[in-house]
Amino acid sequence: MNIIVNGCFGKLGSAVRRVIADDAGSVLVAGVDLVDAPADFPVYNAISGVREKADAVIDCSGAPALTAVLEYAVKTNTPAVLCATGYSDAQQKQIDEAARRVQIVCSSNMSVGINLLCELAKTCARVLGGSFDVEIVEAHHNQKLDAPSGTAVMLADAVKQGLDYEAELVYDRHSRREKRGEHEIGMSSIRGGTIVGEHEIIFAGRDEVVKLSHSAFSKEVFAAGALNAAKFAVSVKPGRYSMKDVIG
Image (cartoon, rainbow, N blue to C red):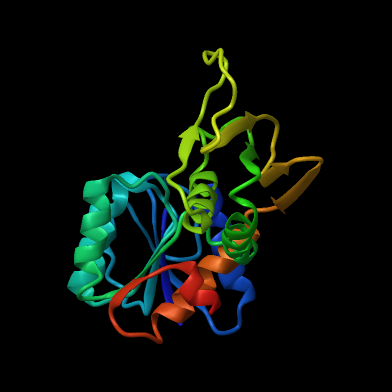
């Protein structure tokens, strides 16, 4: 399978390149990045300039690159895997529109483990949500710009799907001089060192606590998921898919 990696010299893009190199059935035919670095494959500064034909494109850049990636995917009929977070409502509509014509896999986190955690979170919320308080804690390296992480929001959405009430996400408690509300989901962020990614969902009840957690020790777990998503995308009809579809 021939693959284009958009954002090929970034942290995730570099991990995807390593995973592709280790996969006997995949070939990196071109990369896209504004960084000028030596490479043994063609590198372009815009995806619109790529001349090589690919079976799929994996976007490891960021939300600002979405329009260009979708235009390329639709124009060349190339399935796309979108690994970025922070898409606006307008951009979500762009993805839906493109998915009418080409295969799009979009997820805030490409890790198989995290997507399994989402399913477990729904089950726990359905069983415990009425009498247990829910808190989500995430930790990342000190260079991460956004907080909470897109994955933490993804987990919160999964919890909300299992609840029989409309939950409120609470990101900051220091200004609240009041008891915790019954329908809150607390969101806490930690930034430090080189932490790749840690997420924990806490269900705190009367005299007992249930915890679900996931720790990533390298970007390769996300890169492997992205490559699996690309393999999935080439085997299905045009449409918008998530990692839940990929892992079955």
